[in-house]
Length: 328
Image (cartoon, rainbow, N blue to C red; front, side):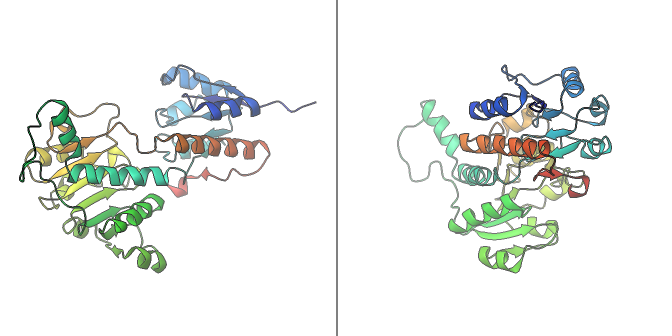
């Protein structure tokens, strides 16, 4: 007799190839409407599922996890970040948590470079002027942006994505500086020509572009605080494709409005999907709807990682992408 397939509840719509494979392997309950689950619906799912496959839009705090039934043994997150999951509370209930690291690296690094160039060269502003009929012909002094080559790039967080950005940036002629909990290996530093700063304050005061690639943890909440943002030079720009909570958005919007910094390119926000009106109104900003990892290939790769983690757990082995509190 075949073993019972585990009940896997998927909280959002995933790419068709991923959903099809999940239906083949598991007793998968899909979300065809793609509407985010309410808190009550999430609690009910936790009471029925053997495996929950959530996304960043699902807030799995200790109170919600307390309602989980004894059959729930795995939370296989669709995404690399797990700041929406109380991993310690899950572990205390005997629930394993996994994520999907690595597969988003190249896509996120690509969009980070896109934002840098869009802000420096005023790409979105120029496109909007054209669409609105404001283009009356070429002029030597009109729509002047800034050259990217020769600038100093300050990377906050030199993990997989930070290093991928550094490799791209070096090809564009940027000088690489970084702040991290500890220096990268000499081999990587030499390859990237990277300068390490143990003091974030010191680095911020010296670079032309700041890009954020740290996870959101209690230690990184408002890491770029109002005080630190004021350390930036007036011509500096800020890029964020990591987590919105890492930057004090109100302070950033004020500095942009006052002309104290030159621009910002943001793909993530503190209270998504809400965007501060002051940020929307700020000059020289490129604001995107959390799309740094939004490629067909990336989403399918993420789904395959989720499936591998579930299948490995089903087979009685430790999932390859298990997350434990000590890692956070």
